Amino acid sequence: MWGDPAAIDRLAATCDTTGDDIADVSQRATRAAAAVPWHSTAGSSFQRRLDDFAGSAVRCAGEFHSAADDLRHHAATVRARIEEIHRLEREAARLAEEAARAVVDGGRAVVNAGRAVVNGAGHVASGVMHTVGSWL
Image (cartoon, rainbow, N blue to C red; front, side, top):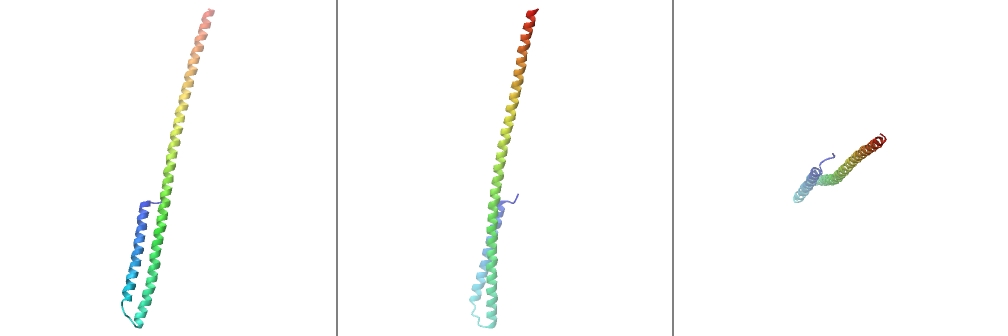
């Protein structure tokens, strides 16, 4: 089996939450840094590094959200395949039942034909005996 769709959905939700958390941390850090009135080379350097971090965090959060979307798509595919397997199982069971009924019906037909032969032979034997008896 390719996996449990519910477990895959839970993993997708975790990825979405993680992406949201990363984006939130980036936004909080950016707001906190913007609130500090730095006017120096160190402040400018820190701001550039924070901007780099924020950009990386946004890309990382996006990757988590993209992974979540891919996982949800996979879960939907798994659900569709599981439903197809169940449909095929039902069809196979129906065909097996139909074949079993045909075998039983065929067996009954053979038994009835055999009875007809035996009954017919009995009538023939009785007729022969009657004819032979009349000769004697």
